[in-house]
Length: 168
Length: 353
Image 1: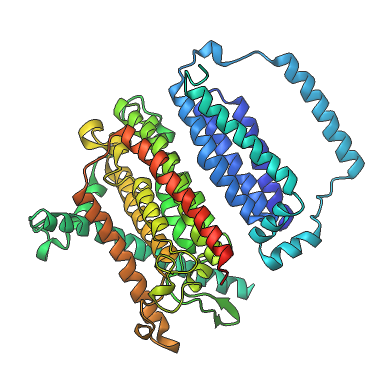
Image 2 (image 1 turned 90 degrees about the vertical axis):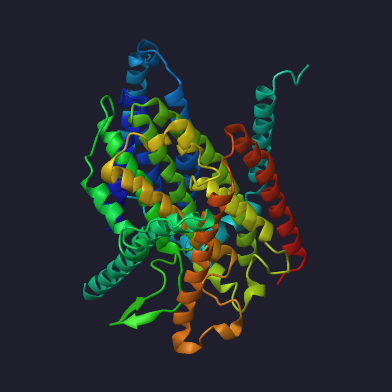
């Protein structure tokens, strides 16, 4: 049952992700991205990471993608400017990635990795959200602070860019 | 296998009952809104269909059902049909985590069953917020797919408005989450048991969340596109905004979604700030077996109070201008909500329960 659910989510994620780049209408691309975000969230739920799943939908689907859609609708890019010919680069990267995938599949076999039961059990005992908070403010405190610093810099940058004349 | 089918049958019937009540309330609200507005403006309101016009929702529904379904020329057919569904489904799906009665677990043929909440998940609040943010897609896509200037302008306005005010809704709730120590709506309700002085809106220690409640209420009025924040559908400027080109049942879907969202937001205010199904005074709550009767009664009373507040605001206030809306959201509500988070967490640290 678990493998079946995983395969469904994985298949849809791969398909929707390829549609994002293949489709010609940017609105359809954005919607494929929405479908993909939902299925990634579904994958989180199967791993008992409900908090991450909800945040995934709120942040990516609810805020960032709406902004994308907003920009796509307002921008009136000419048809020939929209598409870049990237065939050679795509071919090269495709061959490399495919080789990697085949090598991995051959060396590991085709079994689906089972998640480590230890931390998952702990997360279920105290609740998913609590355990994320615990870890974020103890083990990963330094990366967490760095991330907030980067966000602060980005925020100040956005203010300076939008306020013309602030730099004299 | 037997237990699974029992569980499935129980859950499906529960979903059926909740959806039935919600859709019935939507029908009642369409009449109630017109009646309340009329009384406030010294009119009678609908009087023709049935005694005192009580059958008006039935007539409206029949009319919408038999209207011709028009898809405008040049519209994107798939998106045009999809948009009303994307708006309505998130509005209805949120009711799955609202507890409307005591948190009891009863045993039906060896299956554990919670009669007064469809699903008690530990991220209940985030679940509602996540699906509320999906509703914005329907509005934007509906506006875009209609191939009409008014619709597109309405859709774009609503995108900006929904993103701005979603943030305020989220931040206003943080104080409550800090005090309750949980994201589950069932646990948040349980933390407010025993009289109105324990409700988070009034609880004196560590810090009453009344300011947060006002921010939440204003932001959620904006989220539901109601007056004075109905810029996406401003009649005097944009005909009807993002659903200008819609007719018949598709139009009805947008309409139902607006009212379902109002009910959902009222339920959330009740659960988060006003004690959910708990009675305002302990002796008003029936003991033991019959607690669910008073529970559902008080829950309904509170929800209808907030719905009345929505009508009241609509009858009182004029519409904001677009720049006023943005300035108010980002420069007034957001700092207040952030300040509330800082003060609440400081005081919760100083006075732990």
